[in-house]
Length: 78
Image (cartoon, rainbow, N blue to C red; front, side):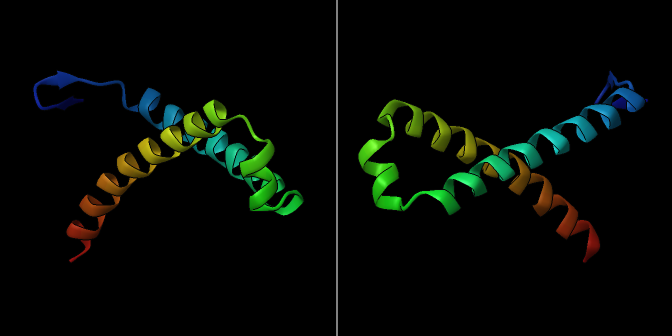
């Protein structure tokens, strides 16, 4: 199949999306464990700032990417 003049492997795309969903679920669970186990104050006080910034950057990038997809899906549903 082609998308914008570029051939893509649809089966591979679907497999990659499924794998990403599982990895995101894992990250979500890990985040929930931290959130439930530690207070925000403890995370801020004892957590390594560089690791927290990396996690924030990753979460922000994911949010932007999936928000773009969500906007296109919402637009199609209208």
